[in-house]
Image 1 (cartoon, helix red, strand yellow):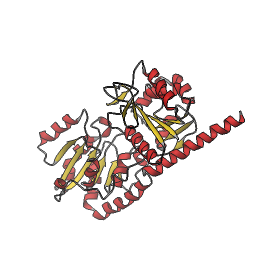
Image 2 (tube, rainbow, N blue to C red):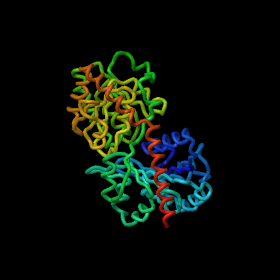
Image 3 (cartoon, helix red, strand yellow):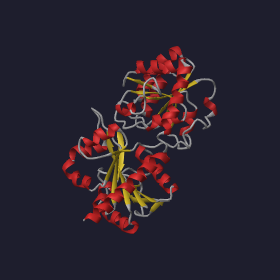
Image 4 (cartoon, one colour):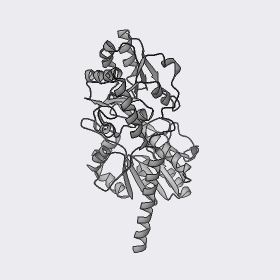
Amino acid sequence: MKIGIVTPYDWSYPGGVREHVRHLADQFLKMGEDVRILAPVSHAGDEGKLAEEHVYKMAGASPVPFNGSIARVALNPYLGRRVRSVLQHERFDVIHLHEPLIPGLPLTVLRFSRAINVGTFHAYAGPGFTSTPYLAYTSAHPFLRPYFRRLSGRIVVSRVAHQFVSRYFASEYRLIPNGIDLESFNPRVAPFPQYMDGKHNILFVGRFEKRKGAKYLLRAIPAIRERHPNTRFLFVGDGSLRRGFQHFVERRGWQDVIFTGYASQEDLPRYFASSHVFCSPATGSESLGVILLEAMASGVAVVASNIEGYGTVITPGVNGLLTTPRDSQELAAAIGRLLANEDLRQRFIQSGLQKSRAYAWPQVASRILEYYYELIEQRANAARLA
């Protein structure tokens, strides 16, 4: 089968949708399918050519600020011509569009595609939050409706993603979650030796923006260290708030609070392997919580905010602890509870390992491929009856 996978977001920058697309394409290639990725790429030149193996560089990417983050999407008046050229050359059987209703590349592909079009809806925006899809859905719903009807199949990655998109576009959706890479994230990964000195390592991973909630973990540090002084905090990631957080730590003279910067795909599993507790104090707009599953797959106990997307992954008291969002004292108590109770921490680790196996990429990719074949059969049956 010839499959085109479309992402609206800049291929040059890491992000959840980009990683989903990359892993899905890798799995399809391992399964013997013929796959191409269509994506915006920063500093575009020679658009329409393969930027790397299996990836078409369709256009440059323009940064658009939303909700304290940056969405880098293709906004180019010549995009239609480039899309037509690639579609005519490749003649895909299935085109799988991620966040299919975001302006730019996905809508342009939907306009010209004659293939089976499948859309995956990743986003969730809770009360008080906006997102790129949210703004598109609310401000341009009548314009987007004809594009939505061009989708032959619709996938949501979580229950809360389904609740979100179906508010604006009622239809049938297939629930197929994000996958995780168990070859990279597993308990056999070697830790960083410099962090294996007997201290308890508490890990945060994410962009330094408001909704990721890093400041609530920072505010929890004094309460945690009051009972567990032999504790180190690792903040992995980058973003607009990083410098302010570093100044916050420096003014207090805290030691063993380390900002590592962005971690490569090779290093991120090693940070998990080096940690005793993973903490994600996000305040909302998380659709599933892939980062929690990666922590579980790595054999790390998890403490996270009790937000809708995380509630689909964490069963409190079984495979982790959930705390009230924005409550640093409750966060400190939950982390302290795991540091004080090794039996509980180990029990969460074992339950988390079991939970993560259901999200392995080979299983997720197989379910998506089965859905493609189901849609192809539906089109063939409709053609026979016509």
